[in-house]
Image (cartoon, rainbow, N blue to C red; front, side, top):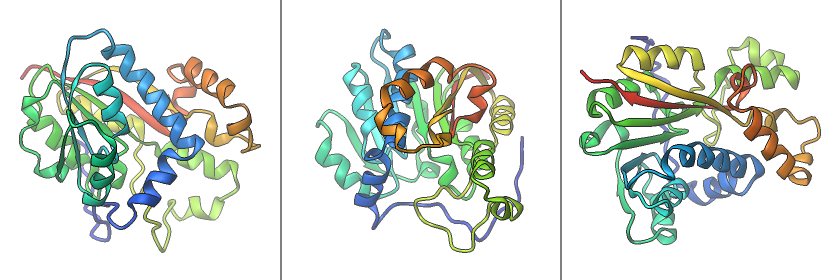
Amino acid sequence: MITRPENTLLKDQSFNGLAEKFNRNIYGTTKGRLRHQLLCDVLSEVLAEEPAQNIIELGGGTGMMSAFLAGLGHQLTLTDISEDILTIARQQLDAGIAVRQADLFDIDDLGEFDIVVCHAVLEWLARPFEALSVLADRMRPGARLSLTFFNRDAALFSNAVYGNFEYIARGMKVKNQVRLNPQQPLVPREVIAEVQNLGFTVHSMRGIRCFHDYLRDRDMADSKYEELLATERQYGHQEPYLWLGKYFHLWLEKRPD
């Protein structure tokens, strides 16, 4: 197991007080829309033709992904630590989706679910690798985990592209953390090694937004969105491009004990 010294300056991040801004910034931009579409692609490739699965989404925010999966015929439970975010979720979601306020570390019924969805959560936690250990301990053998996290390698590369060399030299640390900027980007190869050590089999991996964040002309993300989406879909699962995805996705299955 990979161990990390505890950073006492970091705390798990929630979006209480920032719910509306979070909703606009995540889903009201091309980067948020593209990330959501690409993750929907990944999930539908596996789940569209499967019988109904019992799925829990951890840190699911306003429930966009839960709504998509429920639309495929699956049973959904949406959780998030922020009650402000869940207020928006309850206004937007069908009554058939269970919604509950919960900290990932306190959810003790993960063994009841066929699939755990954990997208863009680890990078907001003070102890992301401990969270992975919790998931491994509480999921039942044969259950699957859809895991997405902010890619530290891609963050470094994009900062180099834009000439932020002093920021890189500081270890990509800022004096005043902006609440909507992920605080703990993770290295994909380290996460892969860790989940394998924890008893997961890696069935697939994919980069999410391998090209969008490196566009020299940012306006092209809007003007050529469909062409960009097609390119992301074609190359996001291929070497070497997948390693440059601003987010990294893993399809995992808990191995028998």
